[in-house]
Length: 286
Image 1 (cartoon, rainbow, N blue to C red):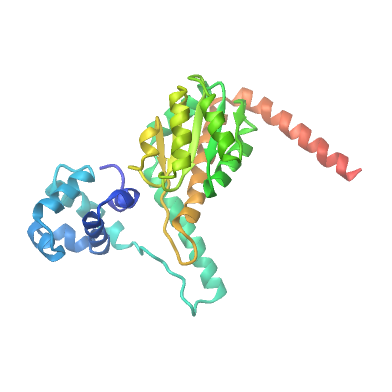
Image 2 (image 1 turned 120 degrees about the vertical axis):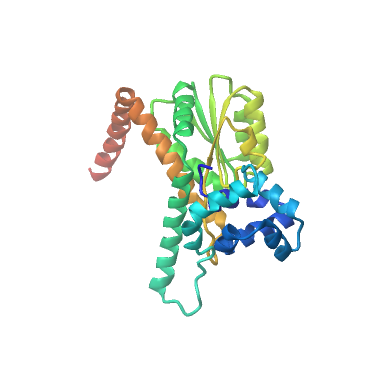
């Protein structure tokens, strides 16, 4: 299996049943015991049938428990080193609190980087480069990421679009064509509004790129290319908020790759943008 088991479990966690979530929690908290135990002993301790544990490993993409154990043994050190919730404590100093936030962000980026696949990056950049127009969609907190992406890609040679209003986004999605590309952002991948936008864009024939934290979410299933952003939650900050830094980095990566692959046209558009912005700054100083 290409991606670390911990990250695979985390990206699928919200789609698990309560029993499956209990198995997932047990694996994350006891990786050594699981990698060295028998399926019967583990199932007994969890109060479930052997077949339930077996089917869980199949859901993760393994051939069965033995295949899962072998992969887990190889990744045991990584799992053992994980602090699932690095909660800020009441007696922490201000510096310590800030450091924990930074540590959480760095871990988010490291985890997300491990899930990147070169074939996905290549395909996404090809879809963007070949598109007549590129539109960015996001609702709520994800709209902030979509706006940042729009601001960034305005410097590219690809015509881009984005609206902050949901109904206008929905209208824009319905007017896309098979020559266009839509990039949608949603942490949960279950936002009804974002799913409706994706469905409208897909019905219109547009290519779909998804950025989400949940690989098996309804939104992810609509994507031609899907990027997974993984984050750790700390107290007073939700996973959705923490995942934004990973989402921004994924989009940054697509932007940089696309600009390098279209260097000549990219330099021309950047020069135009810089010229007009520089002129604005000069006029203010007069």
